Length: 419
Image (cartoon, rainbow, N blue to C red; front, side):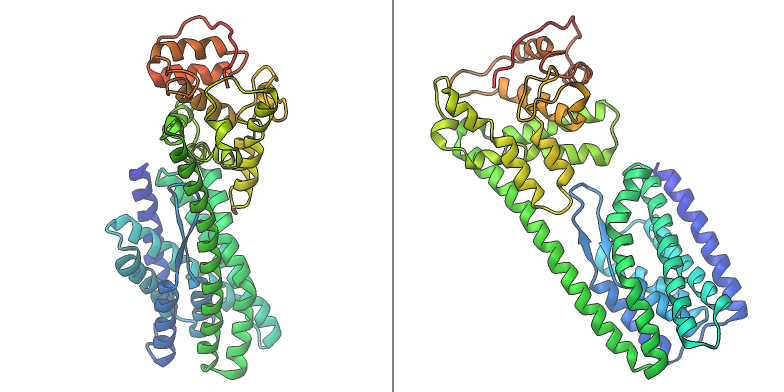
């Protein structure tokens, strides 16, 4: 897929050079004070960018570049607008992201430049002598910029090999597309201010943009801090009990490998891994005497233990972007035959990620020492999981587990799950 991304980036760059040439012939770049002011604010807007939390390896950087680029396109109305957009992303790549990949520069320069070019042409083709009409046309130019940028970015993520088209689209929709949509009204207002006040309106617009970016940055950091606290809670839970130390990390790694064996996308595999890392965080509210009890739990104590999936769900739902993971965690103690908890789901009613987390959790629990028993051997644990296939566990997920674990497949029997 890296070669596909190179071809895609090269194609965009060829289109970028062609578009710039066409624009430069008809409207040569003018390097006056207005150009320098837009360039300065374009670089500054990139400096204020931040990475949004996607809970997976893929990350998206959010900046206020759209506002500056669209405004430069409709104000300057020449090839210098494309140069400002390109210079800003090169600056970000060299000094902020510190990327060393040539393809990244080809892609970013091209897709931002092309988006700016199309926005400029859209406005130039349709503009009138009426200020209010032009304001709506600026809004349209911003919308065109936003959509073209999002489409190019979606295919860029896909061709880079990180995630599928649908996963790329969802990630873009939650990040750049949402941010740009909220920026559109400010683009139109900024144009009005410029037409009414002149060039002195640009610093005011940038001040507003700065306030918005700072607010977004703090909100993102707040959400990230909540996720970090959940990870810390899960770690502290394991530190309370030497028997379960490292359990979540090992289970999460196994869940990731099973998900890959099932052919799930990289992004979904990473999300399952994250959910599995936090699947038992709700046990933070379970008393130590129950968690560490060496004998069989009483009925009332077991009822308390059974509350931990819903407690984990509540904690994960408090983090923006983790609602699906919260649902998976809620159902990781459901059984294929419908005799699990908390909701008694059966078969395909149980989310696939929950079924994956369940088998990883059970295997890691079986092969670890517990207060009430010694660890089972690898072979014993594999045989017990084979016996759970079709009753406790999804047979298809069991097959993937056996493939990952390197065990020979044999006829599946039936057995009870030990909680």
